Length: 265
Image (cartoon, rainbow, N blue to C red):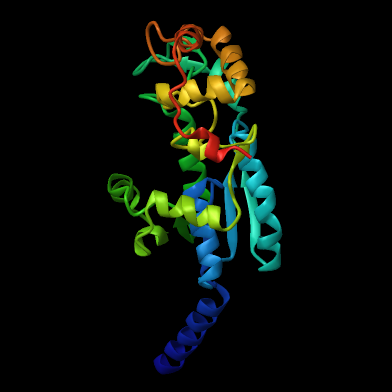
């Protein structure tokens, strides 16, 4: 009798293994690293069931353009595409959400203010949403081989880092994408030639050189940064470095970007 029960349980377990097929998901921002990872996964025929993109609503238009160019490729390979969004709108979190003083129930301000620096509330929400969505899947994450600190920090759960396995650096990823016809153009300029990272355009982690390049080459985004600064008391880059302070500084300085002409259409 026990032998029959064990056999039945064994058959049930085998059936469950067949039914519960492992799901493979690529977390893709459509920046250079995650896009290179995605294209390579498809090229190398790695198992891939789904691509998930977390849209903050504050991405550069070039990111959405790259996404739209990739979607037919996903459809061709029968890869599901999913978009996640913040539970509450980005602007509400930046300007309006009640914020309690740490360790108390006292609301001491409204809005988290600029995202970045010591208060990376946008990144935290993104990672939390992606981890929740991918918790039962094998998740491919696009962190480059030459980012050892990020790799060490993110090695947990069911995450896999193909770029590290393939020893692809950030530069390798960028030029691989260029070779595949992806350039992230805005105003006829390749964003990666004026910005280190093409993360959402209002991130305060952008350095002064990047911000000056936004001021000089992407005036529409600079105007949006000024609109945000008018609603926030906190200067974008710290005391004496509001968007308006920086604009005055940039207006008086010379253009710091070299060799830009080679990257203009």
